[in-house]
Image (tube, rainbow over all chains, first blue to last red; front, side):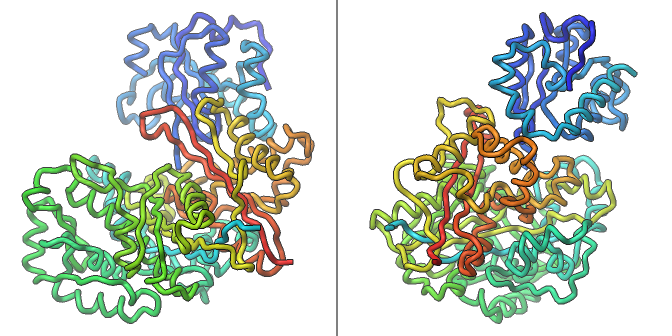
Length: 50
Length: 96
Length: 484
């Protein structure tokens, strides 16, 4: 399920905009992952479509 | 997003999605890369060139303990085929 | 066991196609695009179509979630010709009857709702002739249509129409204390009136169903998501008592419980606790419908050329009483009610552990001791067309994932587990309405038939919608059969 390529890291040192969804993956979970990988979250939203 | 791209530089800004509906992912990722497909709204005709990823694609970059805490349950929840479909879709949009 | 029981459940749908344009999404679309309204109008359903719609038949008990799951989609093409607007635990009412109810729900002078002279008598006759709803208490006002039309031209009034014929108007509060208060404009008042009226229909139906006299009700708890009040107290409450007044519950007091989509569960637990402690004996939990959510997914329906399926206000009412030896028990006691602690992780895993595993463990039970789980039961036909996916199914995957993490089943068993303990969603996308509790009526009936012993209701709430927190809430409770 993940890309094992020789690409440079996607997240480290980057500014990240996070789009979460309440019943899928919430913004906070994505944010925690991004921050742990060295990214900086500059925008975050979690939609609730119900 | 346009404001954020201007503020931080489009080459520094990355989008990460936690949405799991392929239809919505396609629309949003396409819009932030190529402009609004309906040529409407703020990004109508404006190609920001921003790359979009789904969090499931980034497992390798995330420390294992954090992934376990935040995402392991999600991996279980989603059908494997859907995870593959999502990853393939995001890759296709980035690479075209 | 001394736990209280749910002695009745009643559900109502008010099919209000001419109010869909006043839902939040349609209003905003119409303001941007004058062509939206005629396109919307062209895709609205008739009353007969809304009645025959299989998820709506399931909502009122004429069909079950199991049967619904076997009907091929698209459900909106099903022609169930013998579908009745009345079911074992619910009613579907038409727009004109609802307008009559709105007029009776008005308490102010000058009235917030006024029918036209031409239509008023007919509409009220419809209400008075209905075997369930003739009990609504209140006076109504009417005025010549000419006068109402000239008022409508003034721009701050909402016209009530059916098939392009005027039935009445809804006004802002124009008295000195209400003037210039955005919280008391016609649309905000109509939202509160729709919640009040639809809630009252559900309570009236509940009283008729259970045989309880209105004057025997001790307490009402409202769990709707409207905010009614003026500039100084915007969401002050008082809806439960307003509904109680409209339905003749003269000996009852009441309160409103606010907890977004988990409010029905919070309200039921509060009701049960009040009864178990002896403070009250017969408590009604009521949830009125949401005008703001009508047509929420209309843009998707229009672009796909299918009928506007979110055209009904949903409402529900439940009776909680002391243990009668017959009805299903709502389990109380330390640890029995699932909750989401403020300091806990907001990950789904943490929330489901607190909602499912912890209360079951407190009661000496495991997930295998629960016959059915009832999470958010949104109609998947609406949710999928809107691009949100099958919300009920997603919740069942989370429940199954919880069972895997608890070591009860294997990942490969998840689909089978979901089939066994899950069901198809069927409730309208009315916020707090679809949150687990649409299954209560079905559960009570199935338990009476000896088919089920224990059901867990799981209600989650996106508290972050208040912009005051990033938290979720979750409330779960168990319903257990007393049938041996």
